[in-house]
Length: 115
Image (tube, rainbow, N blue to C red; front, top):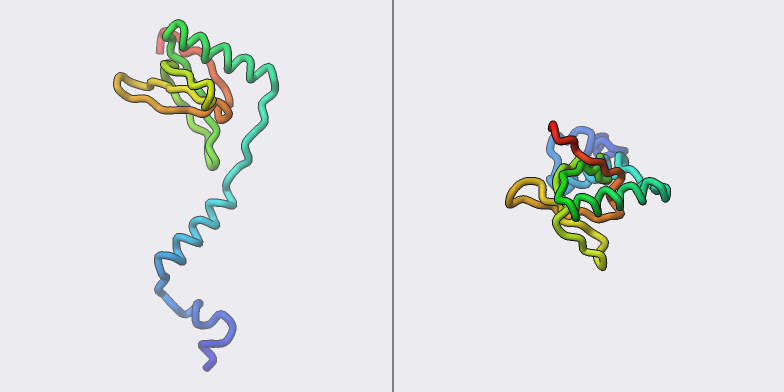
């Protein structure tokens, strides 16, 4: 009966159900998540200026986009602006694009012509 006392049964068991493993991984991942940052007014204006310029001039830009666990860097040209949904369509390569929420953009800058 000693095996059933305390945590003995789980500690001695070598097998783990997939559901338990997923739950453990979700919990670990949730602890690593980071909050969404608040941008100041000047940074928001700079981002909007770069996005509008990319849309008008078809110039390539670089965006740093917030992610729950790590930020992502995207490069491309703004081809569509959805003002109602507050998102842009960033064409990254011919025939490839990604929708990006405006609230998730942390920074935006022009790519130089030499890259």
